[in-house]
Length: 99
Image 1 (cartoon, rainbow, N blue to C red):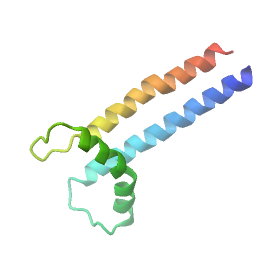
Image 2 (image 1 turned 45 degrees about the horizontal axis):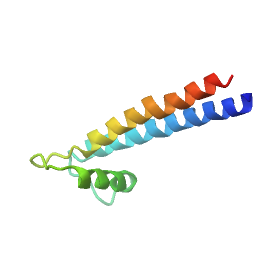
Image 3 (image 1 turned 180 degrees about the vertical axis):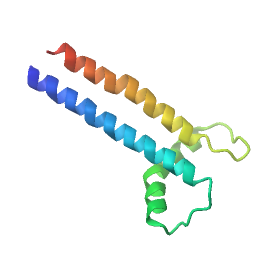
């Protein structure tokens, strides 16, 4: 049973790392949107291609447009914090209870 416990613990750690990295990518995308970035810059293109599919879905679900302000990165960051607090912690608790 300890193998499954270790697997769940490792899965929780990797998931937390992926969520944290994606959160920082979303933050970088939000910060870079405040300036006029070069759309042909490889970093800008990566940030756009990595975040736009999720941000576009969140923007479509928002019932309002707040005077040109885009709240979709904030909502995605809140969702990432929720997933880290709920899903990652649940996996760790399940792994701990199996020992």
